[in-house]
Length: 216
Image 1: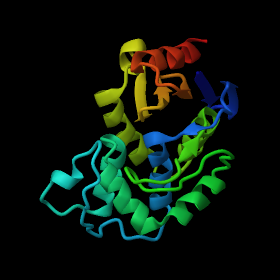
Image 2: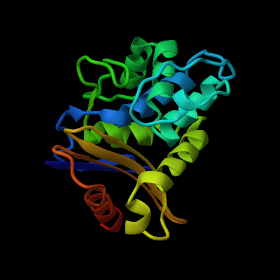
Image 3: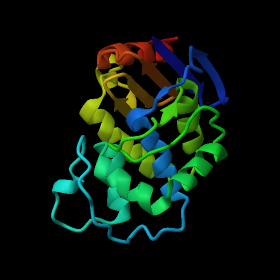
Image 4: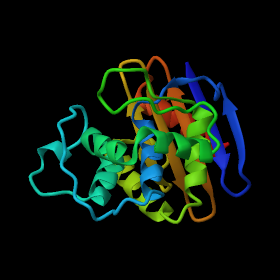
């Protein structure tokens, strides 16, 4: 199953195919952890120790103290699980759930920390596309896009599928799924896309689906 959704930020209209199918969110849930943190009253300059989490990321291997802002950047730019857990523990699952509700996402839920046993965090292609579209309206949108641009440069096939188009993207992968949500930009146009797959499609297959929406 491959589901997709696309939002034109100029008009806010969403198109999708199977975009309401609920799937494990994998690391795409980190978008909403980020927004919950940025809207919280936490001091972004506070330092925070890291507990090993495993999986993707570098924070647990660094010896220098990291601020909450550092953790937020690493969470998106390199999908750092340990940094994500730092923020989840500081912000709280309830605050992330409140942020998801504020954004109007009907089928997205955060239920556990990264790499922990428990019920899956969940989302849909529609929620991912609409959620990123809403976050582009926030005062921290520039920082968000900067981190997602680093992530896209490292992981996404979209820059190869759409040469000349600026890509900012967050991917997520488990044994059962692979997803990518992206902001695509050129001088005249912006488009937010989300492609979800279960079982996991190849990254280039996800990129091809999103590229077709850009060219449509």
